Image (cartoon, rainbow, N blue to C red; front, top):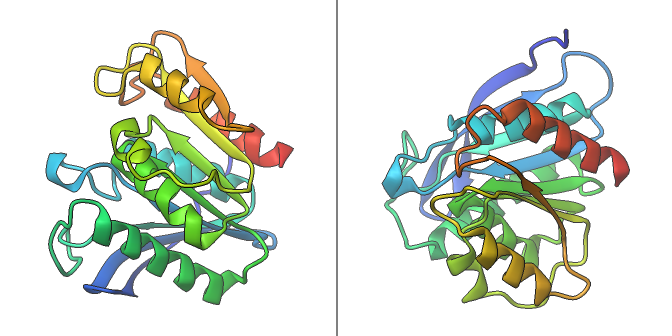
Length: 211
């Protein structure tokens, strides 16, 4: 059984004030890079403690990365207030800068769930990450602002019974991109991946291994 990660409760400097964050890193061995994980919608109970965000963090730590989860502005002990996704992209970029200062720029991945997946996709335009993992991305938020596809390995994971993000919309979105991300559709899976978190973690770990 893998050891629990080293955990530090920290604050990072954000554009609307300080952001509450949780930095996890491997107990043993060299840290090979960093990952920034974005949580689901702040106005629907989303925080950095969300189970899918937690699963993403543990997947990256298992692969030797330091993983940073943070609360968007106005969530938990983070300063500021909800900004309809605009300010939240800037929050994510502040988290990326902090991680690059700490672990270097060589390997920095972005990941997110639902609203957080959309924010990570938009932040990738400027952040230029080494890789991108999007779990049940809020396609309506992505497609309205999508520029050129980020030039890095990109995995989208979607449940076929997602009650909030229609799998058909995700497939249509992916088909419009060239070369397009890798899309994995989990059968019998809802938006929150109930009962499927171990499979989700394995899929992310395998994708990181492959890239």
